[in-house]
Length: 373
Image 1 (cartoon, helix red, strand yellow):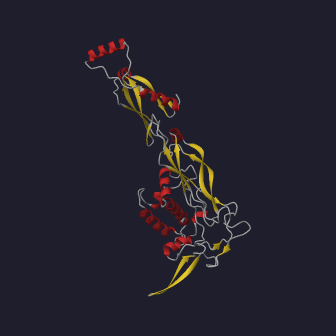
Image 2 (cartoon, rainbow, N blue to C red; image 1 turned 120 degrees about the vertical axis):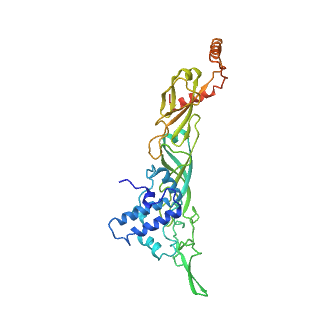
Image 3 (cartoon, one colour; image 1 turned 90 degrees about the vertical axis):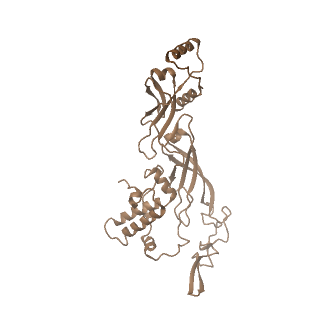
């Protein structure tokens, strides 16, 4: 069964602010929380609401969802599985009291990474699969990630007893106040490393370059991005890794100009073709096609080839190709041609056209070669 739109799930507009999204989520979470709502299907609705909020409350994930929806070529926005649905009690405490400071030793998700990738025009239009090398932190092989010298292991912090936190009491005019703070001796880890690993210096992580295979969907454009789940920095204390966001920069094309999913280009016409009409060949992304130009066509006239533009990155069809014709005056004429033009000018009462550059023809020729004649 296909997923509902996340904005529809939360009942907000696509331009909703962070506060509006958060407010809608709190309301629905209270309504469908399994600890409160015992009706059949409440738990599934709660999961759907949480899945929508997890995506729309994160700026990068929201931007990605706005561009690609649920059709992510690189694992996309998965539903709330058993491991990420989390305990109901934590969320229940957030809404109905309880809570407290987060345990510094609790598993935490790793940091997200961003990689900017430059694509040729054709690569962005048709998509491709490729490998990219990403510098990121990984668990140290020498110490297994615990930061201790091989043959030794971290020891329990003598100051906090392994809790990672300490209670600090203060006397105030309102009575004694107890604050819980991160242990400054172990930095909240609850462990001390006396003999540090020589490879990672006790950090438990090292910088490496990793090759990652990605699928670039057809139709991506500059500024768009894809998310590669689980390819960010490793998690902390056994937590899940972060995600990798690949942001695209697409090079301009010499002949085609892109506007969303539509393509725009110019085609040259001779004076005779424009006057008498003709059938010309036009380069498209899929090869050349025939275009009928009626007689009396003026320079600057637009034609449209439906479905010959760029594939929509979300799978919603394909754009159109818009063609503007430009009447070009030849540079070189023989005596007979000049004589005929003068006769034409005398008959029509107009001056012979000025000469124009032929560089435009060269662009069209290269476009034919680029996408196949």
